[in-house]
Length: 229
Image 1 (cartoon, helix red, strand yellow):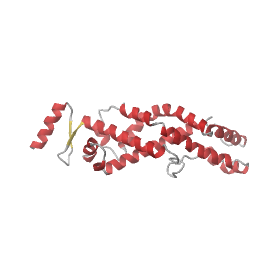
Image 2: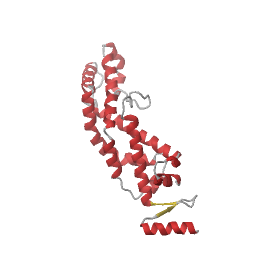
Image 3: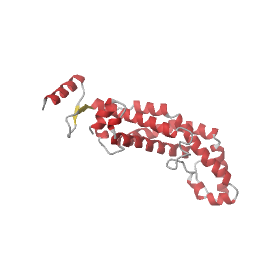
Image 4: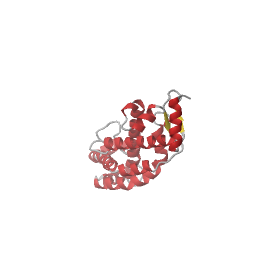
């Protein structure tokens, strides 16, 4: 062990954290730093996702994340158009995406709370996973509680944008023609699922950028940890 490594070990023992030495460099970081990097990367990813999606045309203006109509309406689009429902379909499609934009814009406190509450003994292994390992972990432990917290916000947004009313009218019309049986009674579930899928995908995009360019990270611990993975 050279003098630099000895000093790192001594510092870590004084700080009270286990040391992780990278196999290809002499740099080191503690498990506590790995945990902080995990949280900071998710915080940055959440901020990025909300900034991208939670604004006018965040969903509607992007082919990549634009939320489609529920499957039964897409499948029955031609039939519904034949019976004069084209305008309602288009209005609903935009309203669904506007509702998602509104809901995501209010989601940052939920995401911050979820990130701050993360505590893991496996931070190093998670960080050393694939290009979206941090996001995958975040999704695995937050999707269910975030869905429960997100749904009321989406319900409010769909009501304000008239998407809920439009959905109910189209569902009733579709069912008269044998389309859309056994579908959710409201559009909020569809919007919640689609919005969260896009949210996690956008957080993953931010993680991939961080892994590819750790030297440009905003904090020292992010640069240190991600630069030595």
